Image (cartoon, rainbow, N blue to C red):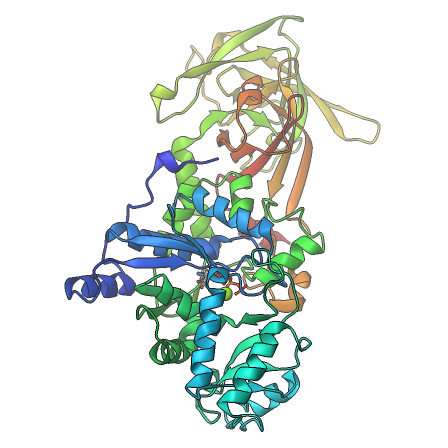
Length: 564
Ligand code: ATP
Ligand code: MG
């Protein structure tokens, strides 16, 4: 669903966080004439809700301050990157409501320029080819408390370095045989400055440059220079790059780049019960824990979209989280709240029985049926009304009946009277069971005078329950999703599987929904009264209705967990 029309992305007041303060000050002081930001995903996975924070921030700032935001695919590692991911990234950024116009770039567009700058550094005596093995390089880099050791190859002549680097490019050496390193300071307190790797040998085909390159630049060497080429004014990234900033600045200072971008760091989004590591998300897909990147349980934008979450809810949520300088974890209920809010106003109401129990109205004429009127949205009369069919045989929710109810149970039980929404009062007369003792049917009577849901004699009932006509309703599959993890802070890395929620998907294969629901389009949200917000899944087809539960009406997950 593309709900771009339902809200422009530019609703935030400018100057509300420290990055906006910086941008504003830079504009006012004339340090920059036009703000240019970028969103730089690596196409090695699908975008998730954490990326949404960065997208909303970068595109949002550009929009608010009259600048522009580039979409740059940071495609410097051909081993993990795929065209499928590039396409998905573009689709997801658009879905979220943003547009880069003609400003789509790829780090790979700059490979030739980056290579020339690397030669410039060699000529300036600021880069060298190192023949140490990857293991030796790692060991000699030192630790947080111990300085590193200079490589025995550190003082090669400019000529030898140039010759070796050109032969690296020509593909003369195998993977891992040599690297190009910046010559900075092996004793630096900042490990990123201990002669960082600029180029690695990699005999791998690239989705865009094919087999033209046998060496690929590191993130650190590519990123800042790509920003400079695009004249990015504010290079906004997450906090883990704070320690890389001195290196970012070092390259910009020592190269003849066309502009001087500055890097600013903000806290990444973390959510309870959610993993946002691309590595773990990739593994969830590969190991079949989910059905794919767009499995509605995934925190990916594709998953959220398929689940029925409106893009406006994602934008609103990340705006509310705000932009801070210290890492923290946001309660996933805050996200759920934003989803409910967005859906409450837009979703029309329908009736669906998820776990049906048959009800026969004994005093209702056999073979007869009638149409009753139901409102489509209680707060929006313009949404109008629709007709629903009532008949002798109905379904109600299993949970709405108890044979031996506790004191506070006001729904249906033997001898009690409840209201069927938009229809009549009914009273349960008899419970029918099968040979194993399971309840299979309720025999009830209705009061014809209560049509529409009120008794002329003024008597009250304590509960109103939803229902579906056995003869008219349609069979549907309903997929109820629960959080993918059972712990607020699931184990990261290889350990993640132990915290997976075995009940993250409940398949209800014999739900009964009112016929109007066969016309709901994929991705359009509806509220199933008393149950939550739902939308047709992409697996839905004529004659096979499949609904996703986007979100329940209120949070029951914490309660269920406590119950065990
Ligand atoms: P990795 O680098 O491990 O592949 P990543 O999640 O950092 O994964 P990138 O494609 O590099 O993925 O991210 C693109 C941009 O999105 C970066 O600028 C990054 O800082 C930002 N980003 C990624 N995850 C989050 C998050 N959880 N919250 C906010 N921004 C994020
Ligand atoms: Mg990254």
